[in-house]
Image (tube, helix red, strand yellow):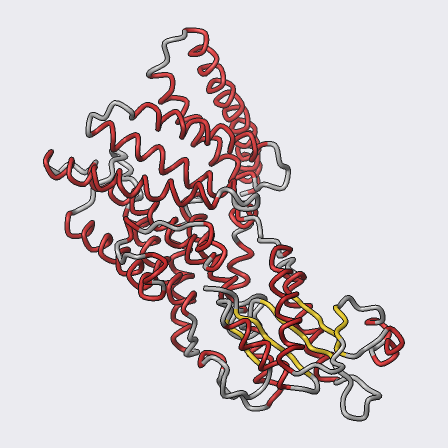
Length: 475
């Protein structure tokens, strides 16, 4: 879905309404500030006061257009609109997305700067003259510049969200009372937050927090397609993660057939919900067959990521099941073929998403899983090209490891996880390595890691044993 866009106005609501009509045809969902019967139902809720209603609208939009005009006395600017500017600016700066705020000054010249508070003198904005123009013509100019500005909007780096996933918890906690971002932006962050549960092995804790968030949605009667989809997906995925914590005795994963089929059905249902919104663009309700293109990504960024990430998660679900002891060979092969199909769908979509610089490293993380799982499925099926997929996964994990370890701001626990994934992939490489020097180099890389880790453990144990010794003396 395209962004929700708040349109604030100070004199001529007809221009705001005309702007809404144009942008609605471009796939955006526009909200004219205040009580307007043409606003989407989800933000048509009347609060106790007009101010509360507008605050609610601004808090649930992804971008904003503010139309500054001198009010009827031609000597002043609407104080309400200046308040809206401050409110929106604070909200968007929180997520470093100031480019989502679009200011238009209609018939306001540089000489009118004194009409603004002193700290807003020289405020950035586009000047538009209304002389001899209809509301529709003015709106066409506004809409054209708004659309041109879309290329300037910077998307948050998803690897940074993964590294700082506790900020998502903060955003979730305050979202219903004092939101720091729109529903759509939060839904996108929750997608990454769910993946963090796997990387940090915090599935039980994060599942509990997601349950609380979803219950609050119901309690507050929140109507958001994006949050509804992402929380349904999240509960499904976190349940999968909790079910696949290895047994401490034999470190084997086993999944019952009924459990597997139930989880697979739930993922497909989320896919069907997305397909209901975009029947023509997707052309299918089957998650495994959903293919996105650059056009769809541009118009429906969140849904593109949700589809792709779910496809990759289904490969993990199938992998766990086919490796379970109770699965017969014929059934294992049948589901291995299905798993390979999901891998190929996820890979195609994720490689498109990886073309965006801010998305690349996170997309590569998911791609490394998908290629590794595809290698496993193809090996089970005896396919000759299996080793090529293992090599692709290895290269992705090597690049991820180099990226993560080379940036000081990446959390140490995430670096550790990325490094372990990479080293485990090296083990796979060694098993098929024919060059003895290459094999020695790989083994040296692993041994250095083990040596460093053992040294760090000894240092930690020394401090702990020292504390324990002194504590016992004091008892």
